[in-house]
Amino acid sequence: QVQLVESGGGFVQPGGSLRLSCAASGSIFSIGAMRWYRQAPGKQRELVAQISSGGSTAYANSVKGRFTISRDNAKNTVYLQMDSLKPEDTAVYYCNADIANQLGQDTYWGQGTQVTVSS
Image (cartoon, rainbow, N blue to C red; front, side, top):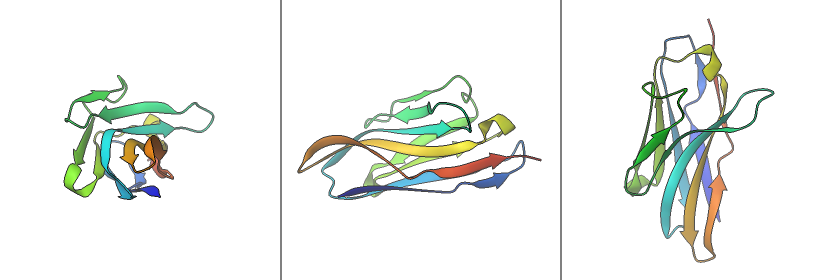
């Protein structure tokens, strides 16, 4: 069984920062790409950032220059550093990872963590 557990969400004023973490645990042989998505009320889930197993990154245009994705392969953990936060960044943030184990390879999701940006 594989689990992804996010942490680090919360309430912050515009211009502030938060750092999200997502740790994978359980039966894991290897982890490929890891991603952060977000879903705001009444909107579709959107891809925010992704990082390959080799460290290559990509970002949504709306967060470029403000968010930074990174990973610690020894800890099976992906991070999202969010700076210069805006009210429109308010959403539930989900991590997602491609994980291989004895059952094969599949994509797993975390339970989500709320980020609220408001004055």
